[in-house]
Length: 190
Length: 190
Image 1 (cartoon, chains in turn purple, green):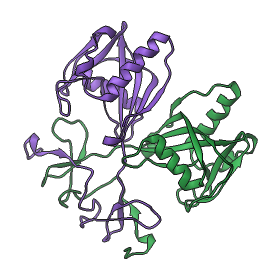
Image 2 (cartoon, rainbow over the protein chains, first blue to last red):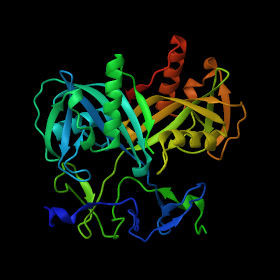
Image 3 (tube, chains in turn purple, blue):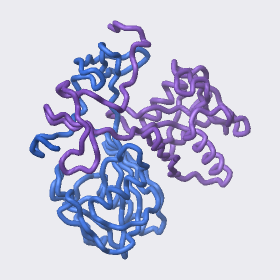
Image 4 (cartoon, rainbow over the protein chains, first blue to last red):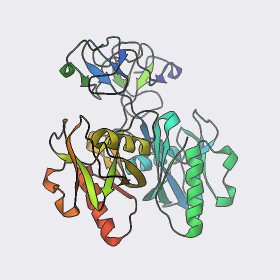
């Protein structure tokens, strides 16, 4: 049913030119009773708000080792990440975090507490990471991962991590593990 | 610069029919390397993902009383809410929470910890509420509020609250206040 090469497709950017409801060209202006410029359709009246997205992931642990996946996709191809991805419609953030862990690493996990909530305003995202216990060491990386493996705390490839949210989450995990108490951490990256 | 009545405009729904990049009619199909049906443009290749949105708000406290606003807008017109609204592009969730508190109540607050993280999958939202101290009892409700006032814990209008996330956040606040320790709570509404 796909009529084009895979490379033909791209995620639609935040910038939009046509109305998703009627196809007319959009205007950039402040709607009535608002204080920000939005993309507005002066033909049908639709206001096209754009807002930050939620990324959900896990810190899966097996016998004191942490699961990381080597990315098979851009951005940050070949770098190591905690399993994570965009939260989908109709799911909770915890079920999304489990889904991403299954898809990217094939790990069977039991989710524990919400661990980090990290704003990334420069890319309009909020990342939520949950602690998780792996139920077995078995892994089966999906197409978005070149490989998946468990790292001891002294083996973490700090210089080869994919994203700052991953590094921050791992850092907080190690700190909390050392003091013996895991809490939920909120932080904002600049 | 507005050519139409305020009532002409409406927020564009999740359902979309035309491509925001080229204006062509969209197809509903699973993109290559994906496992969900998306809105795809077979003319220009744009994939139009839709994802949950983040709502940010506060629990502002002045002398053991909690600030609530009576809504001047739909949905839940005339019901009482904690100050909250959609997180905007380029802001952090904490700055968004402060902004909403200023816009809806005119309250001058100092933000404290992240308090509740609540999934609301039936409307595709994640709500983040922060604890806050009011720096003065002065209020100046904006156009989205009919009024704003402080309620003692025994005065909270439980039957006249706007949203389940507000009720859950107030309930956790009272429980944590009674035991003398405030933590960050994660929960999912069905």
